[in-house]
Image 1 (cartoon, rainbow, N blue to C red):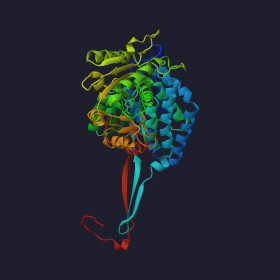
Image 2: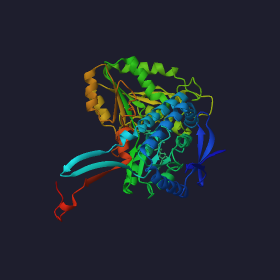
Image 3: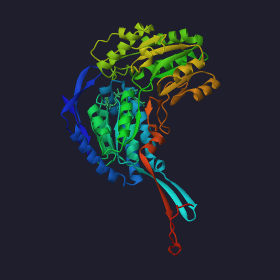
Image 4: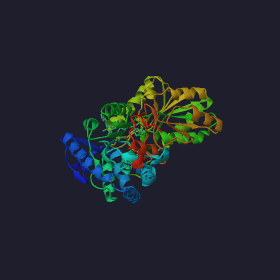
Length: 493
Ligand code: NAD
């Protein structure tokens, strides 16, 4: 059995008494065992990172930027290799995995411009003969804790900016699909990053709790489910760390009566079932406004049998398996509960049979869903699309604004006025107008509202440079010694 360890101080190292299995979700076979870091491994990684952080913050911005340019080149040239590693442990189809890499690469490209992003500010003559300037300095050692569903993109969102800003990093990837993180760490080393600046420490909940309580870690970035995000936020903050914790989602797609229904049905299928619904920006609720509901549900249902579900390495496959057998069974239980709660199961993914032991399930469509049903209230994180029927635009907005999650949302309409009102009215962090998955490009930042994000800083892009730096303000005066005098009054201009 292959054993996956950690990457500390530029070396692959073993360590940790406990292990966790890594599967190929398309076959159901265990392919590796992952070493889970205990306190000794974490202490050693933090000690290495603290030392490396001191050297790295002194490295010129030009040299740091050069690492980003080289990293970009490595990832561009070897995207397929990284995508196949992702598919082998996550299950998503290779083209989707390559798409994830491309979206992570956007942040590498943004960070290559770190000279610009780390610029300070200067004010001349704030008082007579006095100037003020502000610089951005790194925090020190940052821990990045990431989810299974984007094993390359989410690490690249965090670690790249943290490193560009002059920090050292402890990356704790998901224990389900850890190999992409190690690949990225080795690629950074090849790009010229000094050993110890980026360390990968594998582990589960105990390792995470060790991070949250470690005095040698200054800040924590987290992406994962809402209950864990809440725990990360409150524990890290209580321990005096800077923290941003992105949580789960329930993303709605509103279809107005004037929308083009074929385009809306195509978009709903793509956004609900792409990556088997295991995306934090997946559409999981279709809100049909007015009399179009029957026609819209028909159009979505007609498209579903054509979806090709299979091994992610098969170029014909459009959707792969779920991450684990437990995740698949959990999804099935929501479809069963929906029927019991009075919703209409239009297409039942449990009926689709697969002739291997992979963690596959078919796609489901559930109509006449209402708040209060489990299928609506919970984040399912699988290929289940619920339809909520409302009569008016106002009801659609009220439904969405009452939801505890507020990551992404979309409106489909041909009417500019409706779209403009929606942008204004909706209480969600990322909004799409005829765009079902509105993940902002790298020059903006990514984040939801309410229980989809704890903290005040969004991820990647400009906000991320704020998160990973602290500002220092310097007030300067070069007085003539002959003018020196004692003054006990509070200094004013
Ligand atoms: P998860 O919360 O189970 O795990 C995320 C990380 O937390 C992993 O590294 C895991 O090891 C660690 N962890 C798990 N349980 C823990 C515990 N009890 N104590 C401490 N640490 C623990 O999430 P997941 O299943 O890996 O990922 C899917 C979730 O992530 C979904 O809820 C999805 O919406 C969310 N997500 C959100 C975004 C976003 O940007 N808002 C992006 C991607 C994924």
